[in-house]
Figure 1 (cartoon, rainbow, N blue to C red):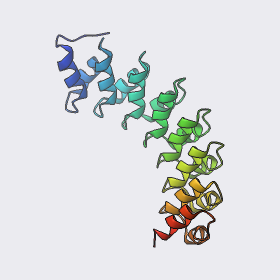
Figure 2: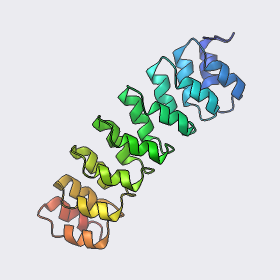
Figure 3: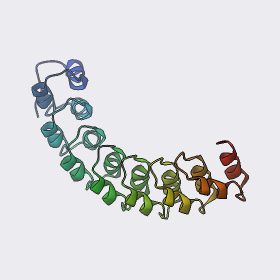
Figure 4: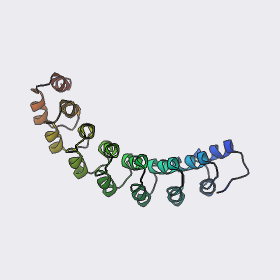
Length: 199
């Protein structure tokens, strides 16, 4: 690990500043201070090869920051999607630049929170959203129902789910008119009110 001649406060400032030269960010990516490396990992000006290096960092929070970074390369995000850490997989699942095939893979993650993150990601492919609409965890199905990119046919299916999910369908701007008409006579008052509020 490297430490520059500057003190930690200055190195932190350099690490988080988007105008810091790429060569300096690459040097700071090997800093002994983990807080500096975390800031480099979160910086949208950090070069992709430096982010790839940080994706193998010993600190979970550094790798999580790489997973959150919107400029992280697709292959690096795919690598992080295989992490044992659920927080890191969740960061990749929530990242709107994560490739569709990686999001589809994470839609089958064993941990519900990762699937939740995939469900709320507006880059998630329609097939993965359809899969998550049948998830065994209620909160995951609810989040699918709130996603404006969920296909109308999937929303129609969710309109027969739990009342909490049906309320989300009623509030979704992508819900088709025939599904809204069905929900307008729903047995649950909250669902009917959600439909009425759209008028």
